[in-house]
Length: 215
Image (cartoon, rainbow, N blue to C red; front, side, top):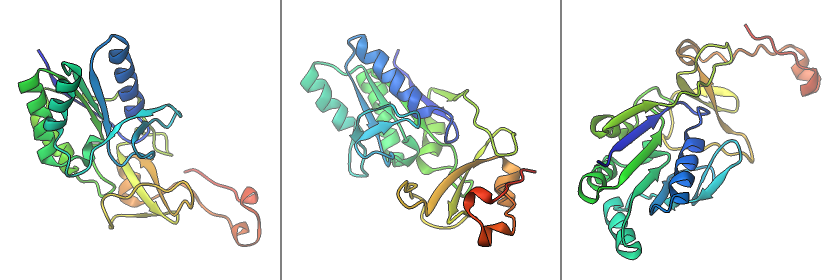
């Protein structure tokens, strides 16, 4: 019996790596499936922080996932599975379409995503997945806050300072580092504490001369 499984975790917990591994394993067995993503660090691909990546269908807001699955099934003779990375960014209606793929087409759907945004609130897509999924699985690779505690929240930093307001969908830019993300435990996400105390040498010394005290 086909299932809709939602695997969730913080950034750095290995969601994309697991999505790529499942897609690879099923494809190697000769099953017909599709790898999907949205707002990945690499457009049109699913990419892991470990450097592994694969081509994927970009899920825009106008894409009907059920119709796409039907088209794949018509072209290939059947569809056995979908692997959907960054599913927190999908529209609630698209999550409904994933459930329909499971129920009407008998294909397994493996969805991966974050629970909460940098604002500490459920994404709309995540909320709908929690409501509809047959299975809800927390990714077991635990990421850690700077203090060593288990990370539960994703913090957005603008020029190194944690922010709680702004556009919901902003991907970190590896070119200019203006917007970055860090993992925090709840206590340090609430306080905005990065654990870094800058010494006076920051004004006159090089970055290498600056000491960082983690408390």
